[in-house]
Length: 243
Image 1 (tube, rainbow, N blue to C red):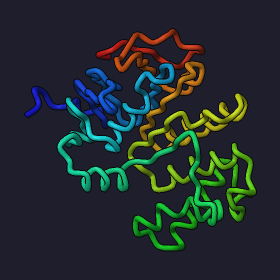
Image 2 (cartoon, rainbow, N blue to C red):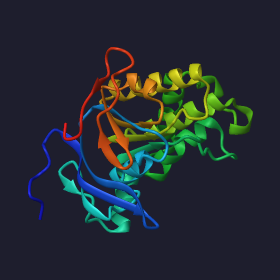
Image 3 (tube, helix red, strand yellow):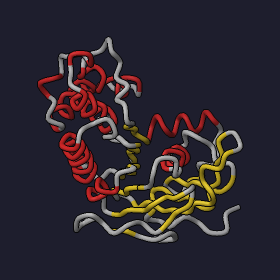
Image 4 (cartoon, one colour):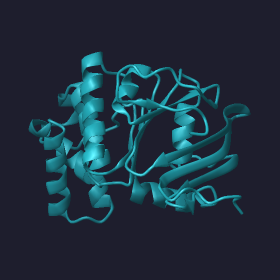
């Protein structure tokens, strides 16, 4: 039993999360809350535990110790099948590589998760077309990944994550392979789309400058929450461990 229930306005909540990879500690007792509709940036150098934290919050990895809650329901007690169902039905993901299906067009790639979730063909393709337009890659709808620039492929991956309207989108260094101008464009669109549709976005980045697109920033260092650096621009709020 938990000592205390998660706050009602926290869509995600972690307490005392510990996770190791092959005996090497990755997270050392992380406690964190993410409010509904918030754009949260998790910053820190490579190897600080950002990807592991997102994997634990998103039910991709089970925690070794501690608790993870989603909408006041425990995630840390779910079976593997339960975690898979949660990810499929409620979460969206964007990584540092788009991982698009090479044989499918951009529109087919975006429609795919909707079709797999049981949406009708017309509804899935209509939503895919709308999200490609919102992300300024509507003219790429009939093209396959090999025919597209990297920045366009990444925007299509963002559209694919957003089209099913998940409760939470996890973005793990989604702009890492892009140049600065493309990084800003993709993150601006991702954060704007999340806010306009009241989605929660958890963004991990090793570049603190990109945290300016978030509502709030937390920093990881050596698997622990640390005091983050000052925000680069006005608008991003920083917090210390424990909020």
